[in-house]
Length: 472
Image: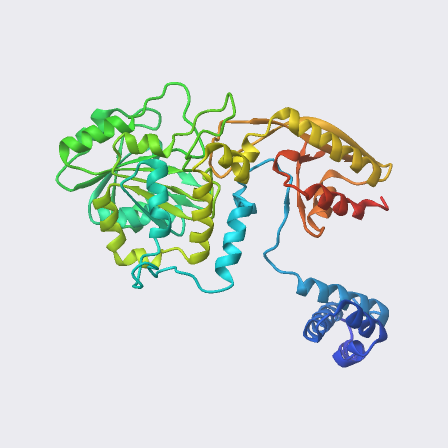
């Protein structure tokens, strides 16, 4: 606080009014040239004045800012107010299914389908043949069944919802037997014990962290048992002295005791990525052939589509789940269905899926191709950046991300940026402040732009972003 309250009040009275700021020639010129809306300028002026007022009351400001500086701050604030909160970014991290960056980018065909369905009406729940009401799930059910061999399919808004819905319907008030080694936690606090508790099922842990035998499951079966659950450890692996029960073994046990078997696959791989040397993710079709009554997985991980939770399995099981009132709470909308249907259509031809679905395409780019792309971009960066920057190529490792293939480091090529004047952390901050933001990573005090996750046309955006270093 100011030592003299009267002096503080005198300084506050000298702050300009909002209308005085907005009538300034700099504001009016920018308003006309940039088509800045009046509401944004008015709110920006209030925000700037509030900051100055707070600084005066703290004693940090002994005079209001000069008008020219205030005008510049108002224009910066107005432009900031006009930016959308959810914006596209350039993913230069090398993590393909980056959860914080929205996971799987959609295929161009899926984006077109989204646009076509969103601008008008659609036959979401209307049967064009009969002219009567239809089911929204029919748009993707046949496709999912033909691609995986499932008897029936259902789609909800994400995989956590799929697991919760299945447990709530199949095991409410009953025991669910799970191996201790599969009581996983996924990022964002998705924890199997918590989901079980919230679904009103009782967790029955068997085995140990690293070894679970079939007899452990069998000894735990009792009159209150409702389900045998197997969970794919999406984001970790137990190595060394390790034993787990296969889906086939669990299914045989379930048949013997009349219990359904459910497997949560998480990533939901429909086909082999086609990269030699990678640890194989279980295919949805293989798990269904093993006899599981129900399989759940995400639509926006290895499948490469929109966020969705997919339930596949026996017709009787899926019909029971679909009829439950909770299904309506968790159902997907027309936009998700449109993008998912087109993504699934691309899977009818494996080669098309590998080239047209971005997640699959990024996984399978040869290292030689990445090196050529990196060399081209590095050459342009050297011309664009000041002499204080050093641009070089590095052998790097990317990740599938999203809890998929956690043990696989995917060989790739990155571009290293170093500066004698700007610290690596500051380079990252400035790149994030570009429009659109560029998200990179730091390795050994070098900023790395991993080209594996750069999409067509994004080289230009990176070159545009680095212009902020032109004076460094």
